Structure formats: C-alpha cells, structure tokens
Image (cartoon, rainbow, N blue to C red; front, side, top):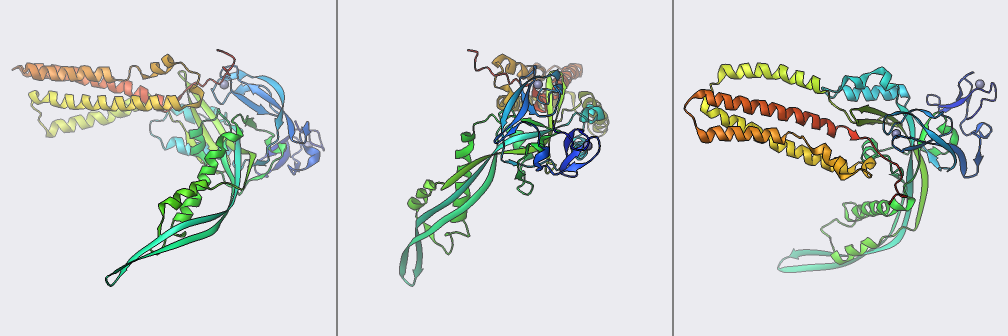
Length: 454
Ligand SMILES: [Zn+2]
Ligand SMILES: [Zn+2]
C-alpha cells in the first residue's frame, strides 16, 4: 500500500488524471515519483501478495487488496488464501486508459446488441463486479541485419528470338521489430486475448509498481522462451512478403529462382530482447447453472469480448409470437394434402439432426480448447454432449417414415403422425437451445496444479 505524504491516506492510480491520487485529500502525484512508491521495491523486484482462489485455483496478485471478493475466473464469491511474494519487475506497462464507467458502457452496448440475452447481464449490481486486471505479456523485439542474395530470371520474346536474362540480386536485409506481444498467462484464454487485441504502442510506458495500485494483476507463468520461435516466424513472414511482394524484387516480370527463395528460411535475428509488459483489461464473470460466462474489455482501446448466454424463456416466448402468425398465414394460403404432411415433418427433423450434430462438434472442439479444461475428465466433457436433440429428431423421422410406408387411407393417421413428429421436433429444438448456451458459456475452470499428483 502507498500512503499520501500529506495526510497518510491511501494512494491509488487514477485513470482520468493518469496519476496517483490520494483517496482522502485528492492530492495527485506523478506515478514515477520515487518517494511515493509502494513499499518493498528492491531493484528488479517488488513485494506483492498472491491470492489463490480456493474454488478454482486461479492465482492473482495485488499489492493493496484484501483477500475477499469475487474470483473473476470462476465467478465464486470467495475468501482467497494469500501469501507474500517478490514479483519480478516488468519493464513496460500500458496504464488503464478506460475507466470502469467507460468499460461498463461498452459492455452494455455489446450485450444489448444480442437479442434474447439474459436480462441478468444488465443488472447494475452485477456490472459493479468488473475488476481491473493487468495481464502479463511477453514482448519480443528483434533486429535483423543480414545479406540477402537471390537469383532472378527474365524471359521475353523479340522477333523470332526467345531471350532469357539471369540476374543476381543482392542486398542487405535490415529491420527492427519492436514489442511483439504474447499473452504470458496460461490461465487467460488465448482466444479472448486474440479477440481484444491489439494493444497499441502509443500508451506503452516504462513500468512502475505504482501503476498497479487499485488493480489486480495476473501472474506470468508461461515460459518466455515458448513464444520466441513463433514471434520470429512472424517477423520472417513479414520480411518475406515485403521482399517477394510488389515493393520488393517481384516486379517487371522478374521471376525469382525457387531454390534461392527457399534459402530465405535461414533468416535469423541479429538480436532478440524479451521484456515483460503489463496490459490492462476489465474482467467480469457471470456464473449460472454450473457454467460461467466471461466479459473482457480492453482497458486501453475499449474492444469488448463477451460470452452472451441467451435467456431460454425469452427465446421461447419470442419464437411462439413469431410461429403463431406464420402458421395462420400459411394455413390461409396453402392447402397441404394430409398424405404429403410426412414429407414436410421428415424434412424438418432431418434438418434438426444436421444442426444438432453440427452444434455437438462445435461444443466438443470448443471445450477441448478452453484453458481451464485441461484437468477435466473425459466423462465430464462427454456429459455436455448428451441430450443434444438428435434423439427426438430421430423419433420424428421414424414416425414420418413409418406413416409413409404404411400409407393408410384415412387422413386422421397422417395428422396424428405429423402431430407426434411436430412435438418431437419441438422437444429436439428445446434441447438444442440449451446446448446453444453451452457454446456461449464455459465450464467452471480448474487451475489447481496437478503436477504433484500422479
Ligand atoms: Zn492525502
Ligand atoms: Zn476462482
């Protein structure tokens, strides 16, 4: 905790003024002011408290929070266990630019644009739970400076002669690529990180622990070496596309020798620097029926990611409101012969089967990719795929097919079979809507370190 030199009140980082502000007397201070720095700063380290969620095992750091509140990762209201730690000092930080109020507004706009969203998502009390988080990133910078040699070929025809001209192309490849960011927290979902990207370099500043006052920060636990090849590969791709692209050698019908293009894979970096950076996000979670939905707002640019569960009852009511007039209108204009009815019900239920199966494969893919699901058992994942609506749709197909094969004379049998088919289709649809909410929410994560358990 940092204290105000005037009144000993608590100092917190204030987003509007981008400075440290006393919570009692409103004095403001420069965040780089060494005298007001949080206690326990020793060269490359600063003291921080690590809070562990007893429910899901997520770890977060903070220098000035008490250990109670909502865990953003699993949405539970918990008393965190805590321990002191010397945290390694990051080099760079993008301080929060977007206030909590701005963030709520962006989030609300997004949620409102989704029809049938669960009304609970707009509850002001719930919105108050948005917490400011600094996410750790590894920032890679590369310098490239090496000779480049390529072979080129020009072919053209003049009169009855075919000309071939060979060129030896050479140059020096020089370039600097600064601060290519990779999410350094294994807990924070890479897909979400991708969705709220990019952060800009405009607000990137030299780090001071003072910027963290009033916020949580996530622990960097992904290996710095892990993303280096990826980042370098990206640099190479960019270099190649500029060499081989329109501004590069590839002009005036020059063909580059494939063999020499292949030699380009050998581009290496003259120097590599890896730094720690902290980037700001507002984080909120919504827990319902053993599922959780995340909302994450980029604290610099305001870009929003959110899982939006729909309200089943709102969806049903709306569907009914639309279905009844459509049914009446259809009845007015079309006379469907009873014996043709099974064709329609069969087409409908076949469509439902295709949709249900598509949904299932999507759920499976998504659940496998979620960060907090690594420790989950196969049965737990399989459970989510059951009761997906295919069963009812199959019964419906069965009834439609049966009545067609039987081909009775009386119309009543067709009506009866279609009614059964229709009910089965509705039941199937209901299950599919439930499954839809599985796609728009997540399993409660589990981050407990299971390394010791064999
Ligand atoms: Zn004060
Ligand atoms: Zn938790």
